[in-house]
Length: 109
Image (cartoon, rainbow, N blue to C red; front, side):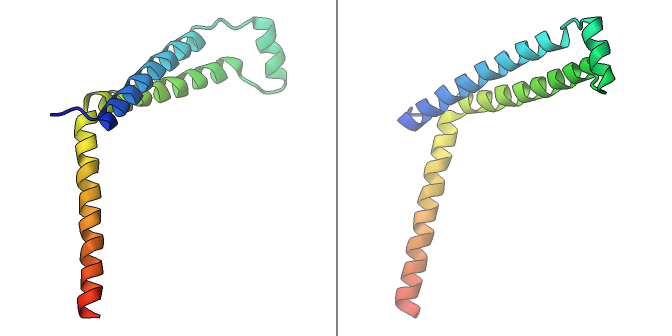
């Protein structure tokens, strides 16, 4: 398949999303393995904030976001040429639909 400019931009975006996903995964790992100071946790529990639970929840959410970003980035990176071709076909079909509606209105209205 011939590589177009749109496919190259999609590959670049996909690569950046994969890097962002890896960064979020590393950050979530650091949050999950963070040791909590007992005095800080005791003081936060006085105002009903569970610091360990908060860190675990943040780590889980960030890992999920990182996995989604890396997955979408991989699809964009490896399927950029096919996505660009699909977009060209979609635009061509939309143009044919618009032309058909115009022709139908011009002839039968």
